[in-house]
Length: 126
Image (cartoon, rainbow, N blue to C red):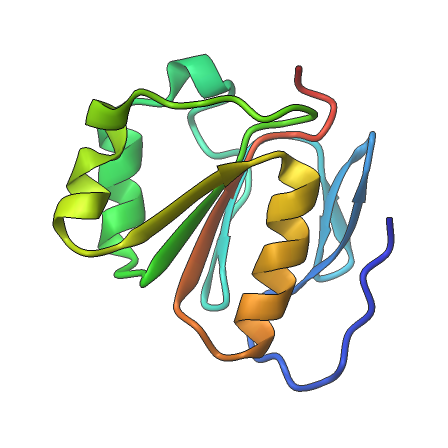
């Protein structure tokens, strides 16, 4: 799916996604990527939802988001509440959804100027 730009977003933008990966700023990322309007970390060290751990969550906290989106691949997976507790304890919203949905939500929130961070696992990941 291609996402259209409205020209108001500053920073890193998600242009689209398909079975090959996530297109950010015109470049395809086929592995896990961390993105915010001001940060882009391709090849994030955690390459599967099952491997998501507290050090990875701490990396999200360093970016001082107001909302974190976690795209879990082709299907939604639920994460253990203790893993997300450090985010909730700081009043940071967390939404876990399929990567396709996370890409769409990120595009809208980033365009609104929100402090959003998205950790996106590849869409083809089951």
